[in-house]
Image 1: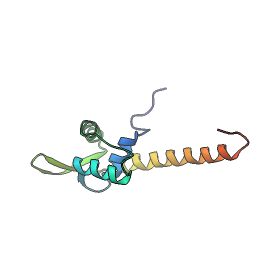
Image 2: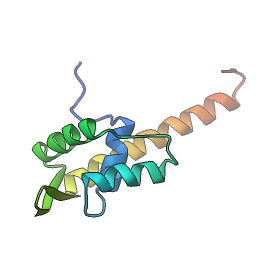
Image 3: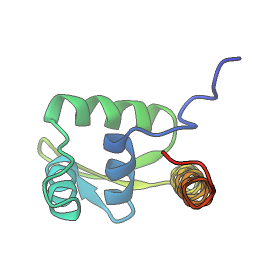
Length: 107
């Protein structure tokens, strides 16, 4: 069975969407992601601009302003829902891990 598009986010997708909770441009996303994750996750410009195109086409983010070549975006309601659903999915995985690791089974 095919998964619904964007049901499961990659780390780069997750952090890009998290950054777009507030209006920002692509350069801001790369900087914020690096700061939030303390360098653990990096989003290259090629990846980011592909994500921005995909997110815009799917109405997950919307353009808010253009200043020359610099474009800013913010999450739409659909984008906030996708991010929240992925957070719930990740929280469930953590709960599953904690329950499994406390049982007699060993990882």
